[in-house]
Image (tube, rainbow, N blue to C red; front, top):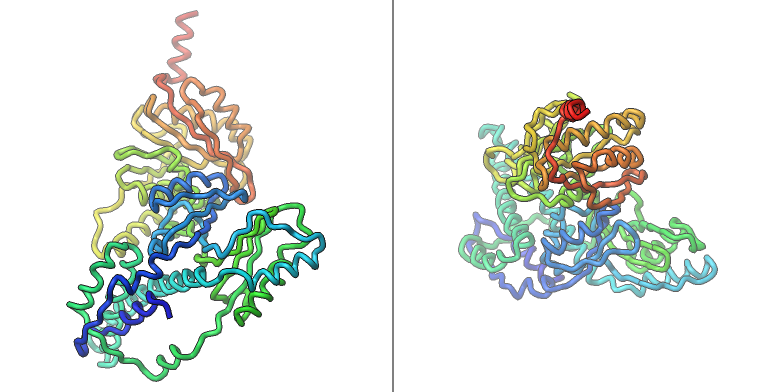
Length: 503
């Protein structure tokens, strides 16, 4: 058993209400695995690889390698930074790399290739990646356990003291474990706290093992893990399919570890990523995409939170900026902004009352989540939702610093025919409310032909500085980064008047 796992088990065995025997936990107990360096792979929205790499460098201090296979980045971290990796805003899924083959030489026939993949399973350095997977799994279980404890404790309050003594003891035990779990989680989330753990344990906690026979049996009996292999393959020169590679490689993994194959209810997901002559074997660290956050009320075209973060990051928000999403839908962009850039003010607006209602509900859910996390009432969030007309915004001229929005593609929302009138009107009104010279806009659309035409007529107020190509549900879309020129906004009616006098 690893040093860090032993320390965790010791902490779990501590009971606040029993014999006060001191448990000594020192930094050396955590040292061997805390200093373990591993390579983490992350899938990101296609086109935002550099944005994700910049976030990793900024928040983790690790340099990133952008994969030739679009939508993936790789970086090296120590195990103690694992929890911080889960807090990245630009990544969808995470996995720990077992081994990477940059120029793998595939054999000419399918049988030879699949035989090589079978032989590969037993030659890979599985040890450290599996250690990371175990730590990651225990970390997730403790978060789930803490949620259940909070739910059980709230149920206990409803009983108004009428529950029996056994229930009361169970609740006390749950609160004890909850307090200890918080110390364990703080260790992962804040490495500096490891110096405080021995003091906390030595001064305030005592150790005593109070377990039933059933729980001790569960600990002693080895658990057979369930697993599956997922193969992601890209390239035209392969003589095998993804299913064939996953089947044969998975059979060898099963033989090597004596695990049980299960395609749906699995504990371990082994990833086999093949891109041309590149092979990367990994172990998944996320069960579902990390972009599934903040949004509880979905609409027909809800934007992924990771993509919303990437768009916001492109415009470089500064403290006290006013950021507006004039076509907010469910509010994914301003909600992500309020979460990450809380020193700015965010406005979510839409002409559809149903969309505004969804955005308001999502904001309310985020506020509740924030209050629960802090354990106290909150003053609120720097965000508001309002219903308005995109072509006639109730905002003062030059009062907005940044505009970030997802324009209607003309597929599930709106129509391409309507976009020919809508896009020019939107750009004109955005130029009015946006601050000259310093104002920025980041606009997403799949109707690039229409947008390019509309932008060509607004070059006196908008200057394009960058275009990021992304994949949205199989559609090739573009994110346009615009800067407001120094020219003051002139209403079309005033322009016509000036022309009339000059003639």
